[in-house]
Every structure is written in structure tokens, then in C-alpha cells.
Length: 228
Length: 352
Image (tube, rainbow over all chains, first blue to last red; front, side, top):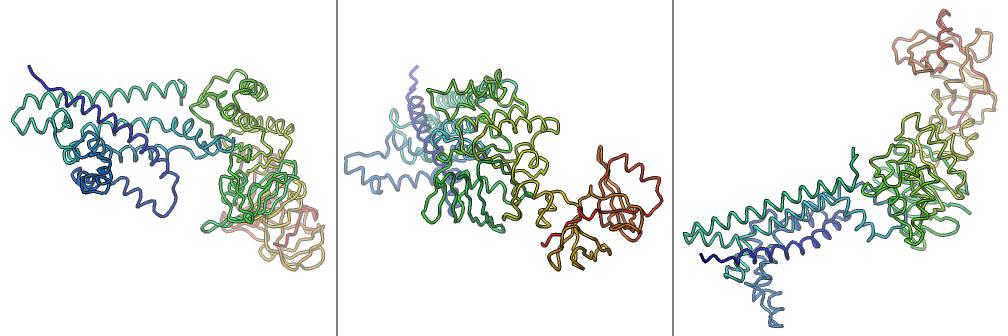
């Protein structure tokens, strides 16, 4: 049997890279927006959440306009002889844009749940804002942040529309599992499609379930067994 | 030099305007909910920025709008005890106390504080595994760990039950005795304030209504609002009739006072527990009254009285008279009306 496993590696590589980027950007944006009280609050929040509700093809179109050979970012990179359209990087960008709102929204909700007095108590004790963020805010919001990360991971793993538009379907280079399923199905190769469906199903479910159990275990050791 | 606060802060529908100076003493900050007590603490701690004014502690400016000084809460080092204690729930007691300490002296200091606040074998527990009283001790130990020059206590006892409250108040009084600095103790409970504080500030709608030693404020309130917050239940508009007497139109009586009445119009206050049983019309400040309603607490009873005529409804009353259960039982043997009497010394006149 000659089964090409490359879509699995490509998918995993892209998803991990995108999740790492989303984790940092999403946390930063969520924390910043939690504390932002200006008049642009509603607008900014809307813009950051937009990719969640727009069709992925719209996100893909937007990314093409930016990083395509005639887009501002694309032209700038061309000066250095770099072309990221239809490359691995383009797929990471597509996944990042589409899955970002899940990280942003979910961790923002977790941050907003924290009793502001706890953070204020740390401030009056003289603890720096950076230490408060990493030692108090993030641990207290951790279940929410973990859920946010899992959701973004699963979303970028399943990303199809935008990826296809900006990275195409170059086997061994940019063809991810969802794209492979699409082309296998449209080519009548139902057996290959079914294998990929089973694989992506298994990965997504495993990640979600593992996070749930891990969170429960974490809470137990963190807050003590006698939590009321 | 102590703490100097002179600030203004506007919010929609509310204005905080505070002018206050304190030495090394325990100041009780009393006031109804929404009077700006917690906001005052937050301004001092640097958690809320006032609109203008000045806050300084021992000549160090915390905030000065004219010089654009506003040092962050981290640099003010105020020991702030929050109403809900604001523990770090994911850290043990020892970690909570030591969170802000330098590594080189951390262990030693934690051990000392655990000992001092009777938490010696609690160091490894999580806040969720502690009782309310223990949580309060941890919160106080954590605040004391950074050696603050000023303590801000926000409704420290409101989350405790009555029995524990008394116990913790004693402990708090003990801890505050060793504390060399200003302590601001915010509460809406007059008993707590009276028990723990040297001087008392009354806030009303964002402004300082009265300030003085607790004896001054409680026995000779200067305003009707202060009288009300200190627990005076009977207040009515009064008109001066002579140097030592006023007429109360609402109650239809005139009352003799020991202190001279300084102004033409004002309010007369009589505390509910200062009313006595009188002998009849021959006595001074003695009035016939009928019982409109009665309210029982575990050990005390309050009668709601109408002077001069029989009440029509339960809420048709002028005065509240608080007494022991025994006294109430004795009154049952008397035929109405009850003759009530007020000592001249207990009837006080306030201008506003």
C-alpha cells in the first residue's frame, strides 16, 4: 500500500505553529482588552472577533490582498526575495487569523471572571504588574486559557477555506488533512478520504478529552482537595 | 506627620470631596453604603486616581495633581485588608504571606508571621480550607508582611458571624496596638468603630460630615446625619422657643434641653435607649404616649410610640423606645397612655 502521510505532518506542523502564535497574541489582546475602558472598546472587540463569524473565504481573500504578490506585505517581502503566498507560512497565517478569536474571546471571559480585589491586593503588596500577570492572573484564569488554547488548536487543525485560498493544495508542501479530504473526495477516492477523516477525528477528540482531564487534575492539586 | 488627604473625585451622580489629616492613630471611617468609604481607601492605596488634590503620607507625596505626581500602588506600600480578604486561592497560606517578600528573608519572615497570627500549623493549607477567621488572619499577616506604614481595613468583620466577630475584634485590637502608623478602619457598624478606633470620621454622600474623638461624635453629634449614623433613632425638626427649650411641631410637644439652643431652627435628637418611664404631667419633659407597634430582638424590645393621641395604624408613630425585656413586661401592667420622660441632658439639638 502506498499511502501518503505527508498531510498529517504538514497539518500538525502548521497547527502547532499557529497555536503558539495564537496563544501569545490572543492572551495579550485579551488582557489588554480586559483593562481597556476607552470609547473604542466595542469596535475593537468586534474587529478582533470578526474572523469567527466571517466565512473563511473572506479571511482568505483578505490575507491574499495583504500578502499576495501585489499586496503591501507581499511586495515588501518581495524586496528580500521572499514569497510567502502558497507556502507553509501562508497556511500558518490563515490558521492564525481564523482561530484567533476563539483564543481571544475565551481567555478574555476567563480574565473578566477574576476578582479584581485579588489583583489589587497584589498591587498594594508591591508586586510588579508583570509578576502579577504570570503568577496570579494567568494561573487563576488557567482553566479558561487552557480551554481557549484547545479550541484554537482544534479550529486551526480543521481550517480549510482560508488555507486553500492562500496556501493552495501542493502535495507534500501545503496540503493539509482537511484539504486532502476535499481533494480525495472530489477525485472519488473515498477510502483515502475516510482514513483522513478518522485520523483528524481521533486527534481532535484526544486533545479535547486530555485537556479536560488535565484541567481537573490541575485544579485538584492547586486549590487543595477540600475545595468547597 | 501622618496621612494627609485632600482630594476630589467625580463620578456620574456622585462626588467625593475629602479633606482629612491623621496621625499615628486608628481612625474609624463610618458612613452608609455609597457614602464613598471604599473609594477613599482605593484613592489612598492608588487603585483609583482622584481628579485633583493631594495625598501624602509622612511628607511623601502619593498623589499631587498640581505637580502631576501619582505613584503606583506598588510603591505606596499600603497594607490593604479587603472585605472578602482577596486571598490568592491557588497559593498556600505560606505562599500567600510570602508572595511579595524577597527570597533571602522570605522563609524566616513567613515563619515569624505564622507564629504571630496563630497560624503556625496552617502554612501548607489553601485558603479554601480555612475558616473565615483564619482567612482574615492570613490576610492581615500578608498585609503586615511588607511592613506597611498605613493600614487600610475595608469592612474587615462584615463576613464573620457574631461570635467570631467579637473574638476577631479583640485579636485585631491586639495587632493594631503594636502597629506604628495610621490605620483607617472602614465600617458601617458603629459598635465596631467605637470598640476599635480612637477617632471617627463620618462620611455622608462623599463628604466629611463629622470628625472627632469617638466620645465627642457619639455623645454630642454635630449634625442630624451623624446622629442618625451613630444610631439615634428619634430625630425631628425643632424650633427654638427659648435658650433651653424647643418646640417640635411634628410631635406637638415642647422639650427642655440642658445645652443652650444656638439657632432658630434645627433638629432634636433623643436616643431610643434614653427614654424613661415618667410619673405624669407634673414632671418636666414628660408626655403621654400610645403604643403603635412593637419589635422584638433576642434581648431587647423596641416600642413605637405616638405622643398625644391613639395611633391609627402600625406605622403611625413618633418615637422609638428601646428597653430590656423585663422592663417591657413591667409596662404591660400599666393602663394606657404610657407617660414617657426624657432627661434634659439626653435631648440634644443639632443645627443641620
